[in-house]
Length: 319
Image (cartoon, rainbow, N blue to C red):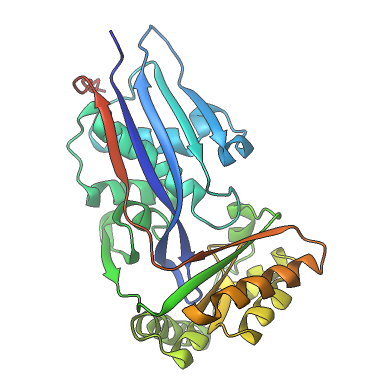
């Protein structure tokens, strides 16, 4: 008998988006696909077969984000991970480049668990569980809901997610260097506290980001993409950051900033300027000897997809 299996496809994301630190994320049309099934046998360990950009992931299967998401969904439903879990996953989301690769993997694992085991968890609960794994919600929320979103943590682990309007004239240009920035290293670069003046400025810029995206307002976007909360402490981790962002602005971008915690750089531009901005960002990095690829996102990507469930769901073992 063919084992029950399920296929999930999850978008990557760009998070922070300048002043939207840990709360604003946008789904991108780079995706992770994972097929999960059970091959039960006593004591069978989890197995993860990786393809595409996931070949860069070298952690043991029980420390992989795919498994972490699967296990989180099981915990949320009050059950154990069944024996014999096999996940075959491939992705075109670059790893360690600030494009939501770990968030997409965590969400894919959780979605696979829900579908395969018939867990009674809605999207809101999945977002909350995945955010607990990732320690910030702005990359898991776009992977679940699609589009551009605002994710607001609340008391007792609650998470409120709201869609954000993105003006039809805006285009997002990404320059992805052959340089990896580990999330742990980027987190360690942040100071333990900031002044009230900095916090007030950051709050104003976050408001400017929301309004600027909705209205395509050049002044608001320029202010919002000139972050004061995290980028000043992380820019040194990305060689050529100043040159690449300056090149983007000089060729018509409203502004440019780190995608996530880097190393990719995101520019927000009018549609007419996008090709020139992409070329200028690539040229600036190549002039420094850095290999780079670029891509353009004309609209935020859609949400996850779940297909291919064969046979009935598998009962989730109780704890």
